[in-house]
Structure formats: C-alpha cells, structure tokens
Length: 83
Image (cartoon, rainbow, N blue to C red):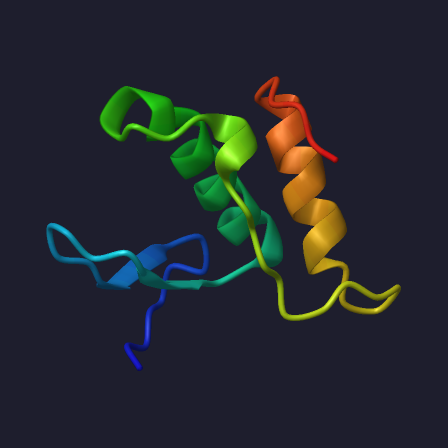
C-alpha cells in the first residue's frame, strides 16, 4: 500500500479499460463516498447503464462505522435518487 503525506488523496490502485472492478484507497470515508457518488453520476454518460441499475456494496454500516450512510448522503447531494 502506498503511504501518502496528503490525507485527502485518493489513490486508484487498479483500473484498466474494460475492468469491472476498481480498487481505490481513500484516506477518509467522506472522500471515498464522494468518489463513489461522482462515478455513479457519470455512468450514464460513459456506459449503457442507468443510475437506478447500479448497486453499491459497503463493508458495513453501523453507528461506529457508517460507510453506507455516508455514501447515501453523497449520492443525495449530487441529486441521485437512492433507496
């Protein structure tokens, strides 16, 4: 794993044209959520996929580790419907 002095840096570890999975290391949950929301927003422009066809899986969503809630909030800020 790459060590970075900038704690707001997003590191894309794996991404090749045609890959279905991109491994990303983010230094904060908010930065990761913003990255995910932005990617979901541009999917209709680059792929033949509608935003409502996208599924986002998070490792956990608890009071102490609210990844899911943070992603939902980031999606809502960009005007995407979430359920």
